[in-house]
Image (cartoon, rainbow, N blue to C red; front, side):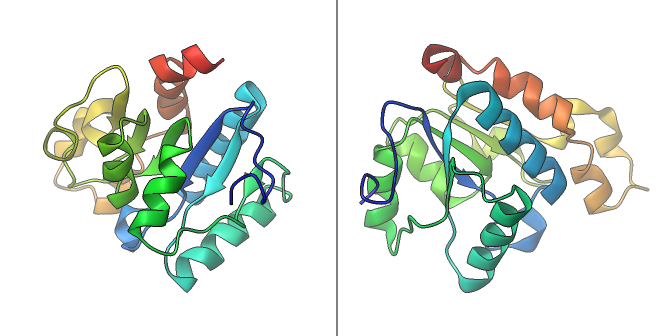
Length: 179
């Protein structure tokens, strides 16, 4: 299916969760756009935007349009069930995006990953086997202000900046091997 939809397996294939079922788990859209563009520019990676619901599909398509329908972005490959999602992930080189079920499946399949954890979702609990191939970032990684009770949930989540994600993603062991 991936070949028939235009994936070239001689280039890096990254499954991306650019949205999430739960709105509060979605990292800032503009930040996500910037990171995805940097990934394309640096690694000439092919990005498969994973989505579930119609609402998530609409959000993925909007982001694809905001990225000028870049030919390295694929929204035409959809997993209709967990088996298809597992197959798609098994045929990819990397997982990137908002933390959630697809990230867990990718790790279970030993696919290197980098996830963005929203405020209140502790990486220590949800990424217990963190290491050189399974990484992520949470607000507490970048600022002590995460403990500031005057900050809203969104303000804490917004502590994760494009530059912080990029610094960690660019140094990710699995991407260095692929570069």
